[in-house]
Image (cartoon, rainbow, N blue to C red; front, side, top):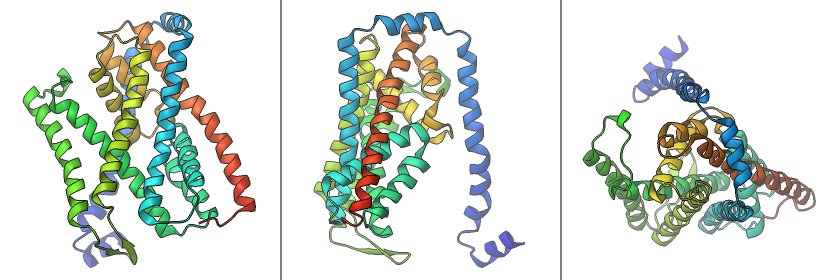
Length: 325
């Protein structure tokens, strides 16, 4: 009765209030089961002894280089919140803003977006004295930065024909390139929209929203694209440069987006499933799983240890400096 009454009172939002919650409730778990099923279909075929052997054969210099690239990626991700700091003009020290973003990103990767990307970030910013509206803008700009760069880089790879569509997609090269062009155009449209809306302010649910300027929008795109490129380069090294860089980037991006929409902490099994499905014919499975496991340790687990240390320092600093912003 309550839902029906709501639909009658709000005819413009009735469709969303009826079908979207139901779709989300069933589609996300089903996608998770699909990914797990994909992993289960390949798991018994994996040469685990070969994976362990591949891990043992890695040169320390390759592992150090991949770790350096992973560390640089996490550090660069921290700059996403500095973009928000510049836009909102909040007075929280730059190092504290950066540290909050880096710590939250490490938790986000391993425990999910609600824990790291939202809850932890909101808690740390609130303790620093930022109001909810400012925090929302900073987090929103960070998310936009990440996915705009993703669209620009992935779209460029698709449009250039560097990546071919999988056979299961039943999608021709021309259609795939068209999708890439659209992704790039959306990123360009964002910059143009920021330029056209420069100086304008909108009211949304009692909050003032101001789009970033065109130069800051370009910084968003460049910073995010560089971050994704660092991630792809780390995996490229771990795969022994046996897979073309463009293909490595494409598979990484596919695994990343599936990991985001699949409700599994740290995307456990998702990364492995996608790489097994898309690259098992190009790289020995032992070497492939060795690379994926090494990447998980270097990009997820080691930064999590650093994120925990940063979080502890931020909490301790908040106890003595509760309102820097």
